[in-house]
Each structure stands twice: as C-alpha cells, then as structure tokens.
Amino acid sequence: KKENGPGVARRGSIEAANANKRNSFMAMAQLASFGRKKNVNLDDGEYVFSDDAVFDLSKLEGVLTDEQIEANFSPEIIARARRERDNISFNLYEFCGHRIFYTMHHSFLTKTGIYVLTFSLENMLLKGEFGEHNTIRYLNYWLKSIKYHSPGANVMLVGTHLDSVKESVSDVKRDLDHVDSVLAMIVYPKMKTQKEAVKMKNAFDAANKFAKKLETEASNAAGSRKLNVLKDGDKRLFFAVDLSSVNKTVAAVRKKLDEAAPQQDFFAKSVPIKWMQFLDQMLANGENWLEATKVKECAEETLKGSENIEKEMTSALEMLHELGYIIYITNLKSFRGFVITNPQWLVDATTKIMYSEDVQKFDKEEALKSNLADDVKAGLDHGLISRDFMNFLWGETDTPFFIKYLEQNLLISRWGYGEQGKQSYVAPSLVPRRQASEGAAPDEGSDLKAFFTFGNYLTLGVFERLVCQVVQSTIRGFPDSRPPKLYAGFSQHWFGDDFEFCLRRENNFILCTVISSKKAPIKCISRLLKMFQKLGDLLGQGFSVSTSLIVKKEYVDYADVKTNKLSPWY
Image 1 (tube, rainbow, N blue to C red):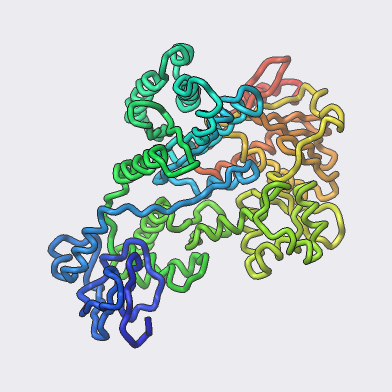
Image 2: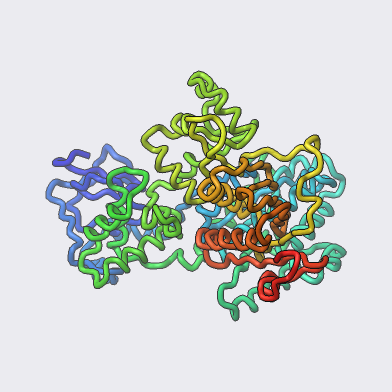
C-alpha cells in the first residue's frame, strides 16, 4: 500500500490504513470503523480502505466489552472476526531429530505447545541395539525433555512406516499392541503394572488408569510436571501412520490436533488490544531481534495509560513467548530483556553451526570455495569452529551476536589452545566419540569418584554445558594448563597442577573421577558444584543436583563428607 493512498488488507494480514508496518497474528480487532468499499478486483478476503479511514484506539483500554466492540468496529469486521475466531492457526517448528541439535531445543519448548513426537514403527519392532533399544532411548529423551521444559503440554506419539510394517509382518495388530505396551512403560515409567501390561492384549487400559491416577495426584501437587498424551481414541497411546499416500491414518492425526488445540487453557483467552499493538510495534521495523531498550520504547509507545507499563510489558512478553511468537530472553545476563522477533531465524542460524558428516545446514561447496576446507574439517574432527567459519555462516554483522548468545547458553566456549592468532570456539555437542584404539580410559584406575544426579532431568545437554564451563574456567583461572581432551560423553581436564579429573556422561548421572590432585580432592568437586549452580540459573526452575561421593566403597552424601571431613576426599 502507498503511505498517502488507500491501504489494502489481504486475507490473513491485519493491516490498518496508512499504517505502514508488519502486523500481528491477532490484531483483527484493531481495524476500527474504516470507511471501506469492496474492490471487485480482489478476492472475498481483500478490501480497499478509503483515505479518510479513522484508526484511533487511544481511548480503548484492556479487553473490550461487546458494547465497545459494537460501538467502535464496523459490522463487517465484527462478522469476519467472529467467523475467523473458530478457525485454528498453527505455528510449526520442526526440531531436527539429530542428536547434535539436542542441546539447543530447550530454548524453544513452551508449555503451550503441542508436541508431535514421531518414531519409526519398523525400528521399534526391530530387536537389538539399533532397533528397539535406540527408539526407546530416543522417545525417553524427548518425553523427559518436554516434561521438564513444558510441564502439562500435550504430546502426540506418531509411529510412521505403517505401510512397511503391513508388508513385512503377519499379524499387524499383535505387533502394534506390543508397541503400545512398550510405550506405556516409557510414558508412565513409574507404572507398577509393567509385567501385567505386557501380558494384556492392549496396554492402553492399564496406562490410562495410571494416567488418571497421576492427574489426581498432580492436581494436589504444586509444580507438577506431568504430560498429557493425546491418544488414538480408545485404541492406543499412539497413532500408527502410513505416509506413503494421503489416507485416513494421516487424517486421524490432523483431526486429533484440531480437537486438541481448542481444549488448551490459553486458546480462548482474551488479550488486551494494546498488547497486540505492542507486538505490531516490535515487528514494525523488520529486525530479527530487539535490544531491551528498544523493547521498552515500543512498550512506552503502545501501552500508554497503563498503571505500571513495566509490569504490563513483562506480562505481554511472557504470554507472546509462551505462544511461540517471540523469544523473550530472561536467563542470559548480556541479553536480559532482549526479544527475538523471528524465532525461526534463530533456529535456522544456530543450527548451522551444529553439523556432522551427514547433517549440514550450510553450503559445503561454497565453504570449500572460500578456502575453509581446514575449518570445516576441524569442526568434524574436533568440534572446533573458527571465527572465519562463523563469519561465513552468519556474516560479519551477526557473528558477534551469535557468539555471545551461544557462549552464554553454554553451547560453545572460547578455545585458547592451538594455532596462534586463529580465534576458535569449541562446541562439545560436535566432538567425536572416544575410540577403543586409544586404550583404557584414564578414569578407570581411580577410586575418587563423585556422582551427580538431576532427578528427572536428562544428562544430555547438562554434560555438554558443564564441559563448556570447565573449559571457560580453565582458560580464565589456569591459562597454562594442558588442553582438555574432549569426546562425546567423556572429557579429561586439568586445573593447572592442582587437579586432573575426568567427566563421564551416563543416562542418569554424570561421573567425575579425580585422577590426581595437589590439593584436597573435595575442592575439585566443590568447584564443579558452583558451575552446576550457574546451570540451574540457565536451565530454569526445577533443576537440582544431588551429589554422592565414594567413601570406602559406599555412597556418601557430599554434605556429610564435608561435615565429617572424610578420607580420601580430605
């Protein structure tokens, strides 16, 4: 539209006459009393607004009453808004399933999401390490991650490749019932009727009874972290889908999503009209992110008249963050109050740095033409990302933003070793596995072992962030230390001559083994616990650490070891 001419509003866009801006998802209610005429050259959802259209919301406060709506909005706009009120609009985020991206997902998980967790029925029915076992580990990771970061969220389990299963097995129903029984044990790990459930023709009943019991308990417990599993009617805990063609199995998934979305608590929540203006104002300049000062300027311009602009701004930002329209950063010191106005931009950019031989989200050929072959190889072989390669991925303008963002999220750490003058960063998520050809692991001969457990929280993501902190701490406090040796799930570190120790990630705990020390070994564990405190600030409420030390082949609580100054830790 032209700034001084008639404005055009297309179906799905929410644009006001003479308002040259990018508008929000719910601002239909902002179109106030336009002098409007139908343009026969446009489709049914497009209109031209006359030059004398009035757009003044200065006197409209909070959530509008029916009387205010009738008085301030044209009948056509009201009718259209009510018609569209019953439609559902989905924002879709596709989280790459590869393990190298796992440490990044928590930034995008909110309790208002509906999570469609897909898995291969073929793999689930394939016995062995690379079939059923891997699938169970994968499902367990995602369910726990969603449960921690998005308590109360809806989850739909979708088993794909049903067409291949039908071709390869004689009794499809029996095999799908087996998958159901396995899923019941993953979804409800505390269910005491596991053996009974496996014997049943269908595990659905047992799991459903246990789910109801959990819901009853959760209603009486503050901070519950239960999951709501969207089941396939009264048949199964999951949806078996054939994606080889458009068919009723796919339609069943879509139907369930359509049914589940309106049932969420936030779906029909009324929102103050000025909050939508606030969002529009943040989106207006087309920037991917806004500093805290700019966000406040937008709030002061659109939330005029509020008794407490700061408080109302925070409430609006938190709601928009939960709905996935922005990312409101509150847990990173240098970015506190920043708003990512285009979350997909952040997803696309940050995943570029997470790559492997078979997963690459950048143009490798173009990187080689830019004389970055050695840089690409360093990432694959050692998890080291050079500043030159970052400039290639993000451009020199955005690179400083992403470096600081990833550093404060403890996804990368500055690497102070190696070639002089070449600035590099290490990403623990990218380092390769330790090879058997390297001999016995250095932590196998020491009895100075400490175990860190995190309740329901997963060690994947915690371990990599801990390694980042250890590397950062070593560079700052012990610059002359030997360079750490980093592998997937295992690392060896030196704090100068004071300590040599190893970290190892297992499914349910992280193990620290002190190999040698010039000071009391307990001080090494105390230093690591301070790092876990920072992790708690980053990962949010609910993260906690329990620490047990080995004393005379017994597990002893860390606090008891300190109080009694038990050997060999003192």
